[in-house]
Image 1 (cartoon, one colour):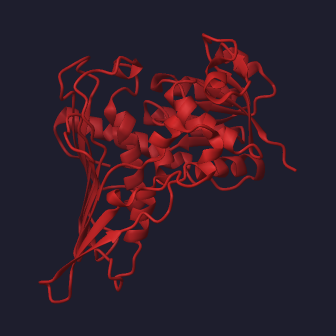
Image 2: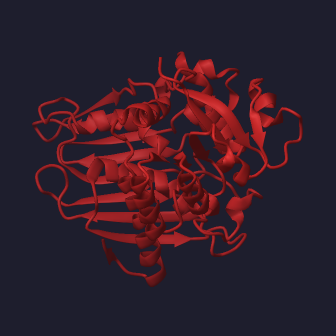
Length: 374
């Protein structure tokens, strides 16, 4: 039997307690939660004991984590501005690393970390978990439908992806501060850009509008963005494709729009967000991740396909079911196989680095008021 991977999670806030520790505990044959970094535990057992009833070793400094010879994998779930330095230190200490998005504040930093991991033969994995959102999995299947399918959208000419919300005030956290990799484009934009790159590859040009829409907090910390990714040709029929990625902080709607995809034969519209985050916040035990209804969308937020028929007059309308449950756990399974068996990474570091490059280009476009070539 292969020994579970001794893991230390840096940070026991939303990231650690919601997106990482539940999966580590749900896969005891793959991972062992050996320790966490909690600088000022308020109780003897710390937040992990409070939330999950599990006793783990608590480190109060990064140096202690890196000096611990039992730690094989470090999960970096700390504020964005620490990612580069924490990942670099962990790699130099001989640890494998899983790091939250955005992986770094700059493209150059991301490239440097990738080269460092390669030189040390260590696994460096980016936590682009939303590749396993149920609606994104459903969308990928829809876009792969053959042109003869009654659900085919034809050649895709426009792809619109939203992550909107309504919040008038600041959160009162480090995310409001003008630190490296601050703002909504680095935060939610990382997810939207990664999904777009997965579907369509690198764009030819980028035009972006990034702003502090509410005018609260530091004006350098953006809270809304619209990014146009221009493709000279799309995936079918060599027609041009426009990808529109948007996050609006003052959007009054429930459920919020998620996807609008327009093709030469039809349009797909999807409302509502993947349910996993909300479920992970309230699960009573990590074992619940392995059971239904975890990750399953309710029918009322399935997407809809409207399609023009051969007579070019009749429009048919049908639900496109999110058949497959969302599965962030697949990322952790892949991570475990990569560390223990050398399996190929599903989320390649070069892809995560390209996300940061696209964010930098988007900021350049918005600042200079022009379209930039990628």
